[in-house]
Image (tube, rainbow, N blue to C red; front, side):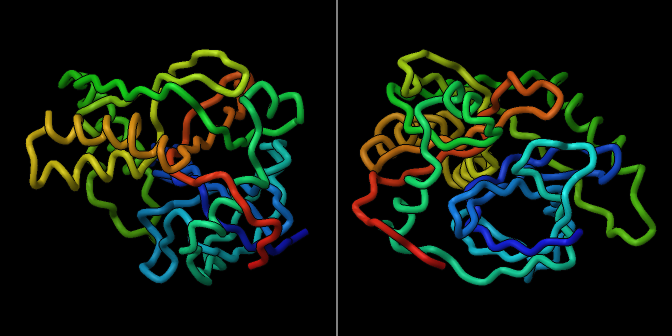
Length: 253
């Protein structure tokens, strides 16, 4: 059975090589009922310009339920139906959207039977580690291997450039537990590459550190988390963005 959905996108994680789809991006958003929708497969770099989207875009799509991914939020998206309908600009509206899905921690999300969650962390610290050349080569080879599976109907993608820095985030969740997770937020990598065009690498890292440990907390830092299909007890950090506590009661889109 085919369904339709409209979501406000909150998650756009870094691309991952895929045996079946060459490359996919974990995307997710919240619908008008406040429910999560995990959008898969999204071959983001294959999308035409009019179908590309970013966080806070309002996106429509058709989907059917996956026969292999039984997490209730997961949708098998029909890529050709993706349409971008708008963009949420007002900070108050963004905050109200976030409030709909907030939980204290990944443990609370698990107890509720959810596989996606938004939390408000504290004591956030960015940890940056330069990747070894062997690590970067390994990542590149993984993408190259999947590129060989290219369909006759697909355009060849430019070689994926791995970030030379591995970013991890140390933080405390609402249960007071200290955690450290690999940062899977694509916007973090994009910010690194954009800033590196104008600044030295150490200055870029210092800027990102200030943004995540000082600026975002002042503006209401929010983490988007998601668990792994094959290892549901393992939660990943998929998105980082600011959204202050809401004073709104409702928001329709």
